[in-house]
Length: 412
Image 1 (cartoon, helix red, strand yellow):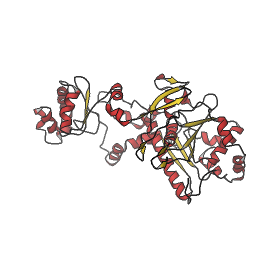
Image 2 (cartoon, one colour):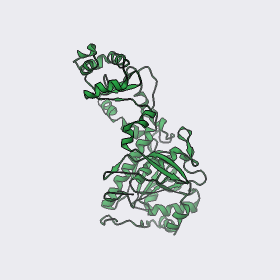
Image 3 (cartoon, helix red, strand yellow):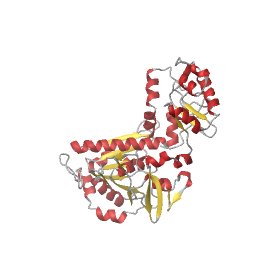
Image 4 (cartoon, helix red, strand yellow):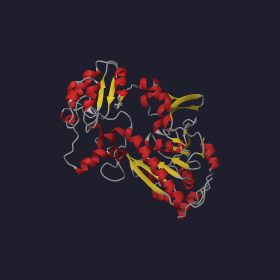
């Protein structure tokens, strides 16, 4: 695919994806969406655990639908990294790669001999991206790196729901997805540096760090004021640290969401005299649950569309709370063109696309996730095992990266 200005930004970049399940594979996919060539390296027989760990139990053409969604636009080769011959061949690829992405627990890549220091001996200018659960140090370093578990230790589940609820985790793999963004961003930044200076580098992040970064407002305030505590409010509140009317309210046929809005203005629009006199901003805090109860009672008397007509006309910050079906049927969803179709062996799947546009063009590709080992023969023919990686490792000299221009020269 090309844009109006030519090749995609990462065209010509070779990425080796050693990761599995979500955070690492999605980071690699983000680079693929931007034009990089991504070769997924999987264990023979079973491959990435994501091939069988199904979101909602759904599969297509032998793999989970979620695997298709997060591994589109990649190639797949198989290698048993415990076998010297396979490991030597993988090191050949490492010597030629621009980026390596891995998300094993700390210590695994060191035991294999593919940790950053070892890889840098083979390829000094490589960009090495490492995603973990909780970093490489500290008492949590060896804990299972899984999304719900990372959400839990970060305290995030205590920020949603009402005061009457227990912990309420986010119902999607938010830690994994945010970590994938950070890893892709870091790898891209190091590529920029490499093109300027010729120097590679190591970028690291974790599920926990992604969750802590998500809470930067809360943590920054708390670290500077130890009186700050999480105190959730009534059933309609959508934020532990924002006053009324911030929340969601039932209507006759659905729900409506209100963001930050002046209470007196809402009182006038909704014909609630109890609210029109609340001119002191502190009342939005002090009488939060009363305000929310009055709003909920009023919204329950009309349809969502009715109230949106009144509030939108007055430029009130509001929105309908859509169900999944309502979202997919909406004109807004159609207008943003967030889907694409991919194909594999006669099976066509609709997935989401990259959320980026480059030079005004949506990034999309019809190449589906690869079959396990689909590209073994072709990749081995393209990158034959010359023994250079083994020789370089023994001598301490790195094999040159094929097809990479020096930092001061333009690349095609």
